[in-house]
Image (cartoon, rainbow, N blue to C red; front, side, top):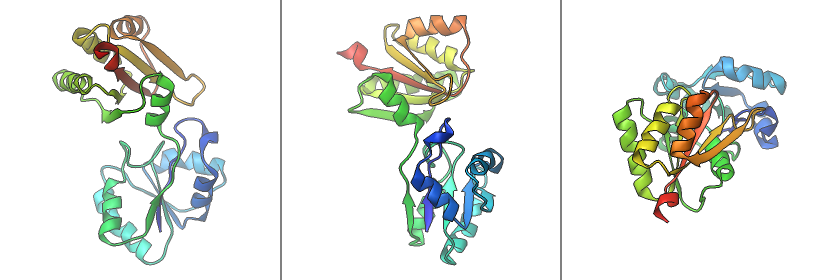
Length: 224
């Protein structure tokens, strides 16, 4: 069995009992970054062998993991935070499980995307998530324009170093577009900043953002 296990996005207490049981009972845990995951596992007194599984080695690591699963080992897969595969490694491994008819399951658990959506106050009945916004301004603008045209609440991961630039682009596209910047979700300094693209651009120019950010836009605010 290969089990994809969500881990907390910030607050360690958010891990589920089933996730802990799965990690404790695993013969091997595949981590995005063993250095990042080891403190969490140590906190819960989980002493299981670790191997790395990240974007740069996933393709090469898969045959080894598949072989171990075929030998009967229980393998848990975790990312640095949240649910594996969601802008994190794991997609190729799921495909390999299907190809080799290996039993696998995905546990429910923490997700920055769903947490941000629920906390934003934006429409939740239809939404899109498109991972990290492009680094280049031209491509970023096209991605934001497409999201606005979709009419659905749109979510992106964004770097704090690019957020001001992104808000400037949104302000140029439509200054009154409703935007939410969800920052440091589940952590001590969690904040939701809501307002027009123009207002949030002005706000963050005065005080540069820090931490992990989910950016949400509400096209319904200009189309309704």
